[in-house]
Amino acid sequence: MADFQELRSISPVVGTDDREAHPKFWIALYTRPRSEKKVKEILDKMGIETYLPIQKQMRQWSDRKKLVNVVVIPLTIFVNISKENIPLIINHPLILRPFTFPGSKDIAKIPVNQIDLLKFILGQSDYPVYFDTSAFQVNDTVRVLRGPLMGLTGEVINSDNNCLELAVSVGLGGTARLKIEKIDVGLL
Picture 1 (cartoon, helix red, strand yellow):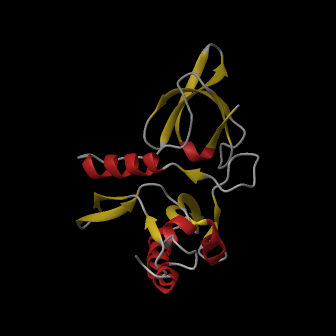
Picture 2: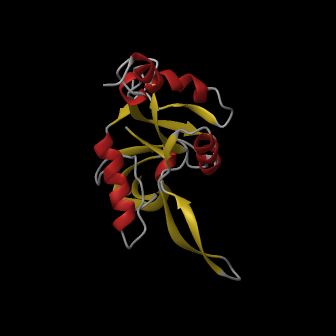
């Protein structure tokens, strides 16, 4: 049987190891634009477990094609961390803030099965995966929130990866159809 000194060397909390004394959970952090990979590198060096959803995609320029690693969820990195270690990372200049629940200041804990599902989808898919945070459905009424068409309202008639196709009534029994990025519109 282990004596007290051996137990003490396992953890400051006698009889447990650090996993039991400081349970970890997944959280999502907002990062500065195009900083996700750098934040991952920094947190990995600190010994903090991270998950950055990336996938290889073929990108084409005018003179060449190249296979590149693309971040699937822009501005986001997932971190498996204990509550005690959150203050160590929150104030880093490349980290904007943790995700919170709407109307709450509590940090949103991401269930392990959701992280595992995302890893599975990205690991097994032969085609590009796009992450869509919008809840736009066909027949939804939306308003353009930014850009030269700001204030325009229309009805969603089609939705694809990053764009919506809108029908905007122009009177005289007709509609104008246009495509606009999802990030530029909001539900009414």
